[in-house]
Length: 312
Image (cartoon, rainbow, N blue to C red; front, side):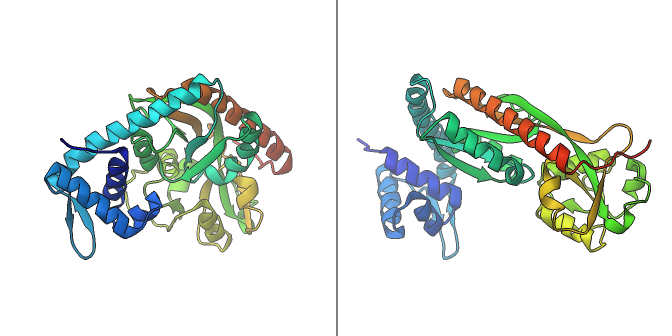
């Protein structure tokens, strides 16, 4: 009779996710030899190998891949049992794991952390910043409770709640401040600086300019909006910026900001979580809090740095 424990399964999942004993051990807060011993014990109980090991990496066997899918379902269900108990108390207590995309987190996060602690005293808010694809996967695996992303996501297993919409503005060198604001067609012919592939904001900027995502670009890529704005400041090109990022990103750059004429490029930011989550009602309350924090932040920035609207 096998004696599998949740500890075995959590250690296995960590190693399967990281593919590296050292990183998995750090995640589990145990020593690498202890992790190796637990994995060996698990394989002995199953009487089959879960991992292929070599000097550089650890890889799941064919059986290990199938086993990993079942383990993640089990661990997610166990976590949701805990969430049910938390939800029964009528308010969130303990840990809340929220993910955010990089083009939102630096600007929205400071506005909501204080509000979350005020709304739910003692709440342990844990933040994760990464790209949308990873956030969706971590939600599905039960490693996040919710995420703030650009909508739509259109995943049948996820609930989507719109929070707010915001326009994109044009960022160009200060020397170009008095020039006419280019339209989308003209912008397509300019050196447009974009985030690297994988960022949804990149795809939204390309869509506005009617550029295919795989089309060669005469420009440079950056890993953050800060990098793009600084490149614009030294005259390398132009870029687009979501409104919420303007006050933070332009304060130390030699750039000018302008709105486009006519229909504005924009995005909708929303909050997502698993439809099966027992915390759904509490997450709806948090969504309302985030929405209000964004409105308050916008009210403050509108009076501080309103970019001029182009004449159309």
